[in-house]
Length: 487
Image (cartoon, rainbow, N blue to C red):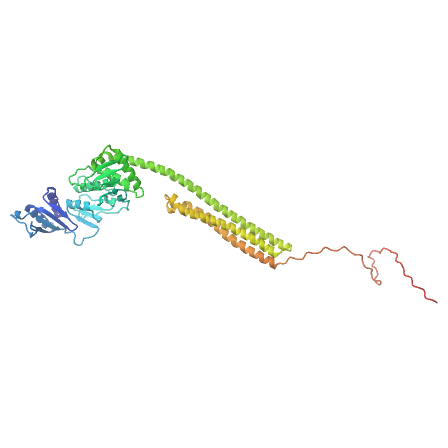
């Protein structure tokens, strides 16, 4: 509680313009103090065990006592007690409201902010806020598209936040209008998110342009004032619009264009950002959502048409690969049939083995050319798919494209490769075997027809005809006369 009393004292002096507060990560400087205020700060710091050093107007270290008003104004330098062994890059301790404003304005990389006096902790999508000594579970949301890629700035110092997650409340977290620190954060978040909706910001950083049509110019204050009043419901509309635009990195650019156009045409004249958003932002957000749904419907129609065309293309390519497989099977079967016919002819007829080898070589060459043409076609189609996929079907992920296109076609192509490879191997072995067989095997000589039967030769004189032999036909044989011997 002693820390809280010191923070309340410092905040009260700052609101009354009785002190200037500059807060750093480990130190706190309070300047332009009167003697009474300096003594009060010294007493509160001593009770809270804060290390404090007071300097007079001449910069000399002193202890303020009664009657030292003439040595003012005084400057007090305090050191935060919680930052001894607890100094970490991702943790920031803030003691005063002015210090909180300063860190929100300049920014700080710490993810965990401990703000003294924060009654209700809350989280954004990249940061957590809680009181000193308290903590809450924090889960950082994924990165989204940077607003600086969507808003054009002409000034040298960029005012559009680089990471919008610092100003987007985490899901399930809200602000309390009764907590002054909550409202301080809401004002800075309103300023940052308002800049994220514009199309262009001028060199002064205070004029937001919305292209429209019609073109709209809104002015925004250069700095957020602590006493500026803003209804929390007006901030909730800005928060909802920012969440809708930046919740998805891929859709952020389209949604930003639609919302900025609706903001430009919702009002009738230029004005101030806070008042204009109070009157028109809610209606502009509703119109932008309707326009986005209509654009999504058109995109859906085009996507369905593209998917239908893709399905036809996949069917055609699969059919062509199947036809190539069928042609390869036919060519291989025909060549094998020719080889079987040549074997049969060689077994029965005397055929020149060189002629058989030539016929098999022609059949093998024809089949090889048929298979090569099919493979060339498949390779061309594969290259075309690889080249056109990122241009025509970027809306499909690599996994979906492979599942819907790559796998079915690869199955048909794989079957063709297996058939052609195994078929050519078998046909080559058969052609070689048939050629060897044609040279090794000799067909039998053809049997000559029998000659007509000749007349039987006369049987020898001493051979008696058998009883079974038919009786020879009697022929008159002229007898040779021998001359008579002289007596």
